[in-house]
Length: 230
Image 1 (cartoon, rainbow, N blue to C red):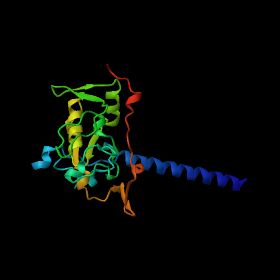
Image 2: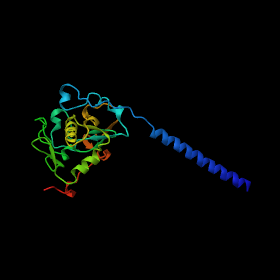
Image 3: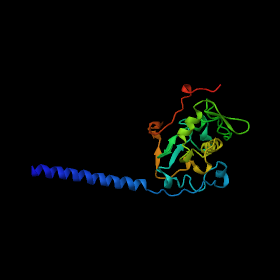
Image 4: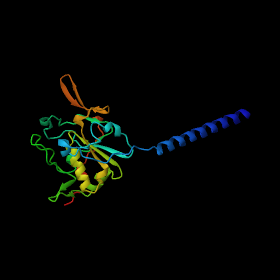
């Protein structure tokens, strides 16, 4: 009887210790203070024309990954119809920074202002259409719902693409539709990223090039299942 009582007391004590440790760990993480982000600030020169940020960009993004108050979006298509090889890039999504999820910008609205050498990008269906006055109208009843889900307004939003163009266009779209400009960062282009969080998608083996798109957290937009606004 005494031995059974000792076992029960030992088990209860272990459970209480585990519960106490769990509470301490949870409290530690819940009280974790995130480093204050610098306000978005467009850099100078040619990169500034794309709206690339001065402080948080390809060279510094590693310091700002894995934040619970932020989301990370790469705006490229898996395979873009534009000839980005003509400007030293890759029309395929050849790699991505760890933590970034792919939301193709050309599915959000029409692509405008590409270099002549690139030619045309995707010209199919889009969630929004830009009007002559520069504002945007929804093409589907679900357009805003999708955008708010993919780009939460209560989070900081880090945008990246190949060279910085799609990311800048996305930032302009979001701000025009009511997002806080002080929570959106164009961190530039993957083509210029040399950090330690690279996920290589492009593979070259036996003189053959393949792409491991299965490594990507990809958000497809199925327009056939959306309600078009006539």
